[in-house]
Structure formats: structure tokens, C-alpha cells
Length: 139
Image 1 (tube, one colour):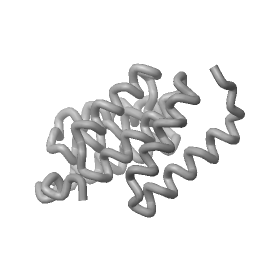
Image 2: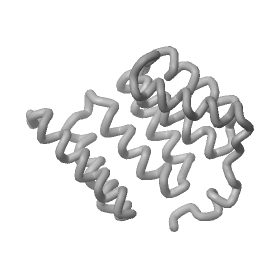
Image 3: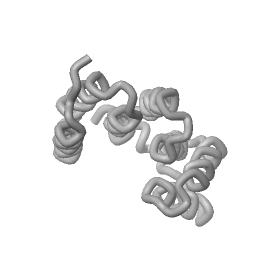
């Protein structure tokens, strides 16, 4: 196993998110897959990889990837919140709420819990994802 300093891993993750922001999904996926290989005991790069699928509308693959992140750390509010988001956009409100509430409970004052609570608030206000999002998968 190659030991990579955490600062280097953080920079790699940031570069993956830069690619994601530029809609360069293939490059983002490759970077995150590399970080997953370099840090197999951290769920963070696995969640980042799931985000690549989620933003492309491939919610099934995103959900599978977030589940893999939860296999690494089953108490990760970070992974649960993003799993909840993917379930919401897939149309599984019940599953989304289950994961979002758990993420909120696990991280009552942190950013993952806040993200989860913001999505819960959207659901409570009647937000329903546009089914056309799925039709745009892969674009």
C-alpha cells in the first residue's frame, strides 16, 4: 500500500471537484477512482465518486456508490446525506427521509447534518424533483 499524505489526497479531491464543476465527468471520475484506490479506508472519495454519477442523473449508480461508502463507515453522516439526496432525486421520498434524518441525527451541528436538514425542509415544503431530470441522464 502506498502511503499518501492527507494534504495530497485533499488536493486530488479538489482537482476532481474542479473537473466536476467544469462538467468534465470522465476526468472527475478518474481522479476520484484514483483517490478511492489511494485511500480505501475513507468513505470521502467514494462519496465524491458517487457525486459524479448523481450530477449526471445516474441515480442508481450514485446510490450503489454511496452504499459502498457506507460499507466503509456505516455511521458517516456525509455518505448518508448524499445517499438521501440521490434517493430524493430518484423519487424515493421515504428512503430519502430515512437517510436524511439519520444524517441529521449523526451530525447535529456539522455541515453534513445541515445539508440533510436543508433537503428535509425542501421535502416538507412539497419539493418534488422534475422527472425530466432522469431523461437528461448522460448529457
